[in-house]
Image (cartoon, rainbow, N blue to C red):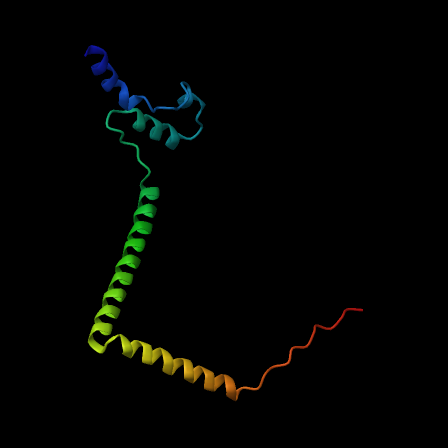
Length: 117
């Protein structure tokens, strides 16, 4: 039990992977302060900007998922209100309109690129 308590007490410092003389080898005061803050109990040193970037990315992903879920529920409600055949009729009418436009246009002839001399 004594060994286990000792291990638990040392566990937060287990992942301090900085070089033993890292403070004397650092040339920037801000880096020294950050390392000292990390070595204090409670891990006061943090990487706030990286955390904020991750937070914003996760928030955008969640919003996209919510918009997609709202779109799906609105489509399901529309289909139940108008019936699934209304959506199929709409698809058929847009396809026939696209076919009519294609028939009106003359086919384009492709010319090979000019050869260089």
